[in-house]
Length: 495
Figure 1: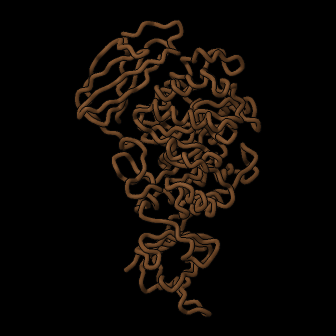
Figure 2 (figure 1 turned 90 degrees about the horizontal axis):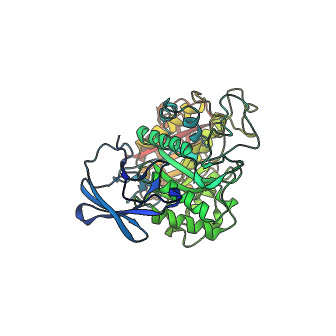
């Protein structure tokens, strides 16, 4: 596991408030590579972190107010990075993700807003890493997490031992009730260091929300220097980790000052020499902004109803990846009334929605009622985990970057198709099927081989015996699900 290089800087004079000292390190490396990275104060020392893409000798200069206050050097020898350099955009298809090394990445996210609090409550016990590996076994490779959240309105206070709202520490001295925004809380940030390091070790992406507006947080004034330093400190501290993804806020639409959001996202890009991807959780006003692609790399929406149509609509705005980060919440083992938040769906309904999202060309995200918010049942194994593992395995095995949605190829409104190649004569076709599908003449059965996938059990069956001609329109082909299930996935490959 490749960790960032962390160096302590002794050449800076100690400021009256060292947390607020805006200094930089300018690095020069092999092939004249130059990186400019903001440093940070951790409560004891001035430090900077870097993960160079190139091995070899690097020199650096410490800069404060344009003056060189110190110099140094280090040798980067490289190492294994489970995240392959970090998340990027696929060079073969701008609507798809890839790792920075160019290999494909099917992003499948897991919401756990209060996961940051686990290390605070149980320092040094490795419980964050254990939780990440637990959900990784079900195919998840990204977690949606708040940098800080205080409590929920639907489950206030400590309702059980696994309720982490309010968490032990807040980002500033004085706590959430009486914060001193000029003095970050070293204990909070030390725990966050361990949390981010766990993501890096596990090889999962961390989609980090800097802010959240409806979780009882006493934030710095919007647009203030206090807020800017909060953003800058987090970027300086964590940009060197290849697991990072930046997001202004959970439900960014709560922020009325859209110019402020744009300014912060541009600043993140200026501070982050490692170029981690930036997005906004569900601000359709800013996604309609023609300049959005100048300060964002992909789109995150929450859509609980028109999963397919909304994905196609939003995909028409920008040629970039689309993630539906919130479309339902799996209930607890007691059924639909067993929920932490007031709404829940069965595991079967949630996975149905996930397949529709994926077959719309977007990336899905999972919520479980007892891990998504301030209650975290770390060792829970909901029924849906198995369903999501089947979905993850399927999309990891295909070249997702080569497929595009093709709703015109299915003559059945509750089924959804993706094709590889020319829709008039596809090389491959993936269909999420409701009962059966009716395909047009160019998809006659004798041109394709294929198999069915039971999305609940993982069972696969060849298409033989499930294909018939339409009685009224014999030029059309009917494919009928062979399982005793209402839904299945069909994968056709041209002979």
